[in-house]
Length: 180
Image (cartoon, rainbow, N blue to C red; front, side, top):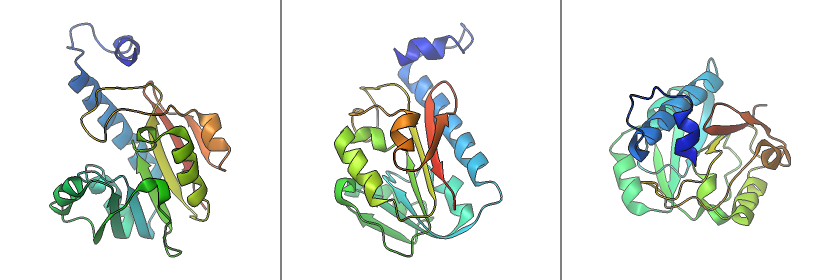
């Protein structure tokens, strides 16, 4: 389904493979995150669901101290090679509680890998964090390279319930933010 929607916005001569759609999606979310962080700087942040650290080059310039958190130790070993994280923690995001000194949390293409009730619990656990940036696809993707299949679908209204400003950023993504 998502590839059909993407096909409406792409030239017919381009090969619409899942890999191509993933690359377009990655570039769109990088652009969204960079625009949100323009002229913003934070002391200590969490990259929840850091994976292999793909977003670290785009968020670290806006942070003094970056902590990557993921449940997958192999992903964190790859993230360590970016040399952009000051700490890497293995944790189940369903039960993760941020420290009081965290002033921004990033959930970039992560929440959809949790069941809806687990994602809602995670969002509840983040309500004390003053700044939050979330991106999530607005379609289900079953065959993804990292993190396994998507288990939940999120709308702006889902995030609004947690005090986040949320909107459809482009043809592939929902973005939710809170800036103090």
